[in-house]
Every structure is written in structure tokens, then in C-alpha cells.
Image (cartoon, rainbow, N blue to C red; front, side, top):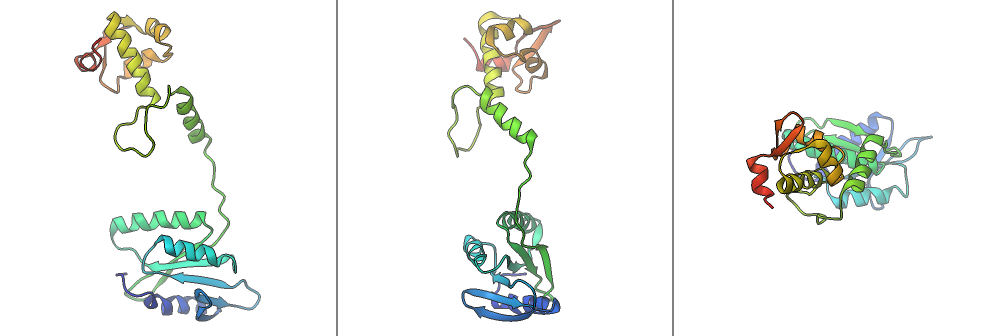
Length: 217
């Protein structure tokens, strides 16, 4: 639905609610749309021509009068529009808000989420990965919010291994691990994701030209 007026959304949303047995009225107090049905919680809908912080703030404020609060926006256009819309639906779910879209051609209303209490599922794998990276990283080499390359614990381990090879020449993984404290030194050199290491003999590793250029003593 192309950006038009908030009022263009009203009649499709009203018709949808009336189809569910609600009596619907507009501009009741601060709410754009209020729908009532005997024995049911009031439904409040905030209308906007697109997702915005203002829309979310208004919708959250309406939760003081009802648990059934929806936001209604025009249906997305294009693949990028869908990705942005999907992300906003996820945000609304976390706020306990329902989401409606209205199609311009025929006023079709689609429900993408109903209001409900959001309880995020925790991922033990992601949590453990986060804590592991924090524990393994030496110091605080990055600046929060910066763009570009991030110094990870893995890169720090690679740098320690490279420094040892630059100073001592070809070495065995076990020797490097003991000298640098990087227990997975052999595995890091074997996989060689940064292109710094090369196996020159059985169990023996050295720096590549790239690694030597970046880590000359």
C-alpha cells in the first residue's frame, strides 16, 4: 500500500473488526480506533502510514487501558519492504502488541501478530558463545559502536601464534601452544582462516608470505 493517509486505513480496519462482532468507533480519547464486544476486552488500534517510534510509543501507552492493542499500517511493497516489516513485527511482539497490515487494492486486512505477553526463548548455545568470547578476549581492544574490523579472541590467538613463528621460525603446534598459552594452536594453523600459516612438514608450521608481511619481528 502506497503511503497515503491514516484515514485510508480506518474503514478496512473497522470492517475487519465488525466482521468479528465488534462495535467500532473512531477517535475515542487518545485512541484512533476502539472496538467493543460484550464479554470481551476492548480492542484498541493505532493507525499509521508506516512504522515509527511514535507509533510504538502511542500503542504502548494504550496498553494502560487494554491488553488488546494493535498497530495497523499499509502492507509492505517489495522484498526490502517485507524484510523491514518482518523486523518490525518481531519488535511489536516483544512489546506485546498486535500487528495488522492493510492492502491498498482491496482493503484486505491481514493479522501478523495478536497481542500477547512476550517471553523470549533463551539460547544456551548463544549465551555460552558470548561468555566464552568475553572470557577468552584479552583486554578491551575494540570501541563499542565502531564499524569495520573487530578484534576477536580468535584473531588475538592467531596474532600470538604468528608472533611466535616470526620470532622462532617453523615450530610444532604443541610447542607453540605451550609457549603462547593458545591451546588450540595446531587446529588454528591447520584451518588457517586468515591465510597466515602453512604446514612445511609433518606437524611443523611456519608463516606464509602474507603472515610474515603482517607479523615481521
